[in-house]
Length: 415
Image 1: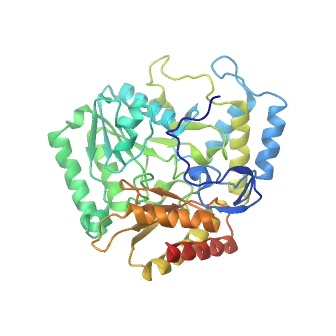
Image 2: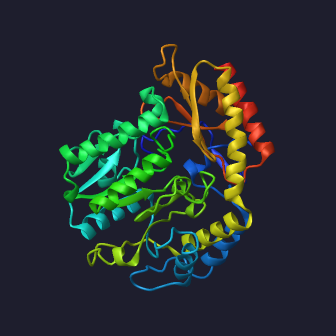
C-alpha cells in the first residue's frame, strides 16, 4: 500500500473536506478560519462562485490545449486582460505552472537577453525549490541543502532587514545599498551581472518589506550598469500587499515581473511579463512546456481578475490589513515574546524572540499550534522558523479579522 512521502509534514492536523470563502471545513465537520489561503493562493477565498462557474464552463469545452501546438481563447483573453494591470511597458507574457518555473524562466531570459552569466539575489529571499530557483534562495538552508553542487553564477547581497540587524530602517537600507556596491566591486563586475532578483516583501524570509529608498537604489544601479530589475511578485502580487503589485508601494519600474499564487485562485498557473523587445531576446526553444497556459487555469485566472477588480479586493486588502496590523500590534504590546510585527496589506507577521532577543522557534510553533487548536489556521516562516504569518484571503471582512484576532490573542495567551 502506497502513501505520501514521509518528508511532507502538515502544518496543521486538518483533513479538509471543503472550503467556503475564508473558512475551511474538516471531514469531522469542524470549521476553521483560514489565514493561510493555501500559502497566499486562494486570494478570492475558497471556491468563489464566479471562479467555480468559470472553471466548470471551461472544463466542459476544452480542458487542455497545449499552447505551442494549438492556441485557445482563454489564454489570448487572459494575456489581453493582464495588460490592463501589468506595469507599463511589460506587454509580453510567458505562462508556466508554478512560481519556481516562472523564476527559472525569468533567469533564463535574463541571461540570454544580456549575455551575462551572473544574477544578484538578496539575503532572506525565497525563489523556489527547482535547481536554479533553489540556488537563488537564501531564506533557509533547508531549501537547498543536500543536493549540491548548486547552480553557479549567483551572488548574494544584504536585504534591509532592520529588525534582525537591530538598526533603523534607514541605517539598514544604507548598509544594504553600500554592500551592494561592494558586491559589484568584489564578487561580480557590473558587466557580468544579468539581473537583480528581489521580492518586494521577503516571503519565506520572514515577511520583511523592502522600502522606497532601497528599491529605487536598485533601479538606479540597474539603469547605470545595464542590469535587469526582476521583481518576484509570486506572493506579493494581485493585491496581497494592499496595492495590486507589491512594488507599487515603492514607485519603481521593473524590467520583468514574476507572478503566480493569487493569479488563478488555486489553479496552477504562473507567468513572467516583460517588454516584447526584451522577451524577443530569449533564444528559440527556451520557452515552452506541456501544461503552461492550461485552458481551465486561464479561465480561473480571468475570473479571479474580474473578482479582484469588481469586488475592490485590493482596497479591501489595504483596509483589512490595517485593521489586522493594529490588532497584532496590540497583542505584541502585551507580549514580550513578540519582538516585531511587520508586513504590508494582508501579508503580516509576528516574530517571536526569547528574553535575550534571539529567535524563538519553539514559541512560534506553540502559538501556531494553539491557534490551530482554537480554529485559526496559520503558518510559520523565517530562517529560524520563529515568525508566524497571516495571509487571509483578500475577501476577508472586518468581522472575520476581529474573529481571527480574538483567536490569536487566545493562542498567544495559552502558549
